[in-house]
Length: 353
Ligand code: SF4
Image 1 (cartoon, rainbow, N blue to C red):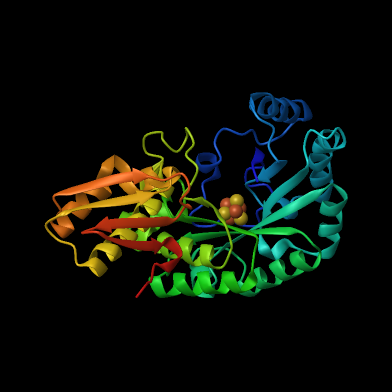
Image 2 (cartoon, helix red, strand yellow):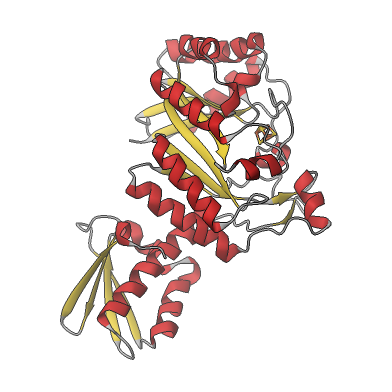
């Protein structure tokens, strides 16, 4: 299903506290503090006009801040801005992102009335100590409760997770992924923790109390989460933060594993694992091999700047790696031909120690 999401950011609106990592002025970009109806209409029309092919589903998304923590009158006003677009059939429904400790039945009545279909919950971690150290101000029990209520009320649910928060570890992150899978949200978004200027995390970093993840660890953690969610049938609709102009300004990012094409790095790591396990299984060394895959997987297989090809050559001493495409081959399947034999690997078969 193709989707058009029209984002409207309500920066810091409804937030009861400031989470240690959060700098929405950088991550959301240049959105005004007050959203006027004319600016709202202009944004929605611009997205609708610039979309070449009509998407299967179009949603207006209120992102940033804590939507259900916003004063109810202002929530009603914002939702009311979207109403005419829904009534005219230009937009199908609304999605919001919010905190897990601000979900209650009265608030959901309001969302339902205004055609909110999807509620994304900022869970970030399912380890209470990590949540406390991140000054989230909610518990893992709040996340469980929020998803349960939303599902009972028939909303689509999404969950946001972060890797590498203060106090996080590989074991704790894996626990978080397991716990979220148990809750069966409809989608997940994951990104590694980045140290932005003007945050408490930047202070912890400068005095040595917080050590960010390395890029390699961030890729490994997120690869683990991606494959586990995929196996559970939960699409990961975003990996890594969306780049904004403000993020790229000098000094905005102080430290941490930021890359504008983070998902490509993770996808590349997935294909590197698949190719390595086939080569290990076939015990191929010092010769040439041919890999065949779906045309849509080629760039992930090659990795950024063909990095996977050079890594495989070096790691296995291969003289030549040929890459062929087969449009009939399903995505996420890698076929290797070597010495007259065929070997096959699905990305869902990747194992983790
Ligand atoms: S609740 Fe969300 S928007 Fe508000 S400070 Fe925390 S991370 Fe930022």
